[in-house]
Amino acid sequence: MSFNLGFIGGGNMSTAIARGIIKNDNHPVSKIWVSGPRLHNLQHWKDWGANVTTNSGELVIQCDVVFIGVKPGVLSEAINDCLPTVTPSSKNVLFISMLAGTPIEQVHKVLKQLPIISNVIRILPNIPMTVGAGSCIYAIDNSITQEQCRLLENLLQGCGVVEKIPEKLMDSLGVLTGCGPAFIYIVIEALADGAVKEGVPRAMALRHAAQMVAGSGQMVLQSGKHPGLLKDEVCSPGGCTICGVTALENGKLRATMINAIEAAVEKTREMGKK
Image (cartoon, rainbow, N blue to C red; front, side, top):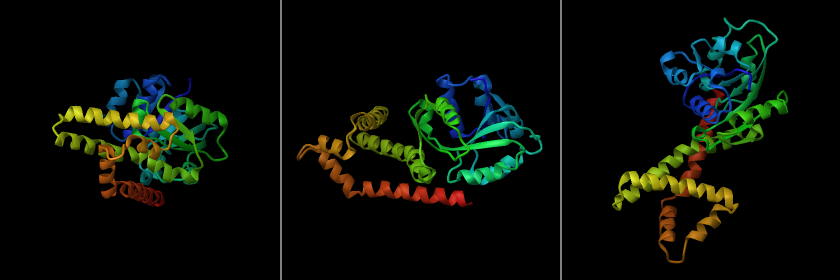
């Protein structure tokens, strides 16, 4: 790929995507740029061989595809900072917005300040993209071409599952994929704690709890079976698994997980309004 790829904001999610791209050789690291307010926070990017700058306007001038990885509330400030540097031109930049709860139309309104042609794809990635096992959903408007969709999918193809969906589903599904890993990390930790309570060494318990969760996910994906059916297949009558499942039901695990998604979606929409 001959184009320059940029990241406005070098935080956790931008880092996760860049690591996945670099790890899978999906783009030359010498053609990756990142901008942020403090250079010392971008040192790991520099160590990879990427170009780092505190001037987001310089990044926009240099790059043809730009991920926007800032907090929703500072989008306008980030684009305003580009204005003194970006001069009028016929250049076309594809912006890929990672802003939670922020519709494509709203991003377009802010980008119109820039004296260049811009298109916007909205994505919601997740942290496991770092290890090539992530989930990234994206939505487009009528200005996006199939070629631009393929470009995005090619960039992220080694990072996990990439799927185009209607924008109306971005908040609810994005919370599942984006916030879900944190919820599952808590589950892994809790399951390991249960084993530790019964005398298993902690490192061993964590290792097998994590592998069990990874394997269970693969069973759902590869078997095509409903998770409820897979659960039933493990629960022998009067066995230890059904006793554990009963404890989970008594603890309202199912309702708690549903409520966690609902709470996160509500917060996402609140952030978008601000």
